[in-house]
View 1 (cartoon, rainbow, N blue to C red):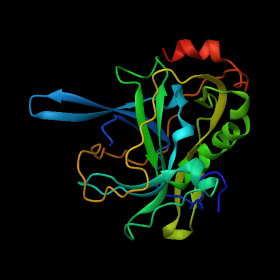
View 2 (tube, rainbow, N blue to C red; view 1 turned 45 degrees about the vertical axis):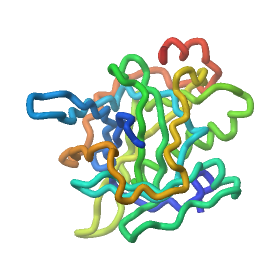
View 3 (cartoon, helix red, strand yellow; view 1 turned 180 degrees about the horizontal axis):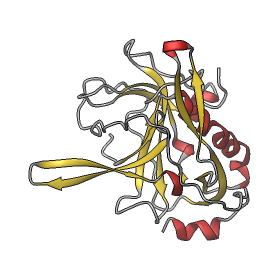
View 4 (tube, helix red, strand yellow; view 1 turned 90 degrees about the horizontal axis):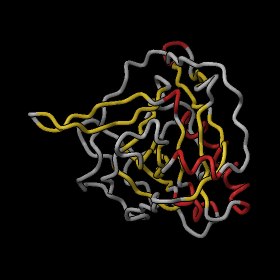
Length: 247
């Protein structure tokens, strides 16, 4: 069992919610800001690729873990508990609502001004093993350093040289490749307007409506990173610098 999330990470996988979302496509190794745009016939989801410039203030303090189901044509289904409580063993992940639910995480973040658009505060969630393993290192780094940074949240940035790492599982016809994000905790900044957004933690929302719409997946092609050489991020207290990034 992972001490980071309170459940075992499975390999592979792709994977109140009135907040707009950030979506990670594990099969293509891309991070998208999904924007809803108004058209004559109604709303349309417009994905904006923010992979190579990804930087976000992350509310790990209120991260939720538990059971999720993402099915085409239906709202996502969640049964969650706060990660800090599950890891501390003061709470348990709710019962699994169905065989189609998988363990995953959900949290709120604020995108840096450069990539945030007009709605930088968003929700991200996933059950993909590559997503969970990619975020594990920075969550562990947060756990180790949060006591030294009271009142602040971690700033997480994607690796500029190698944004994603291919992970191949299975053999023969069952072989598949997903992509793990390579992330760094590069500093700390005040929470600001990134307020907690817990929605019925510990309760299943199975059958409820009003959740973010399902968004289209990419075609699964290997990611074109467009990476450029840059100095490696330094893990230090840069609250003053990062405050301007997040308004």
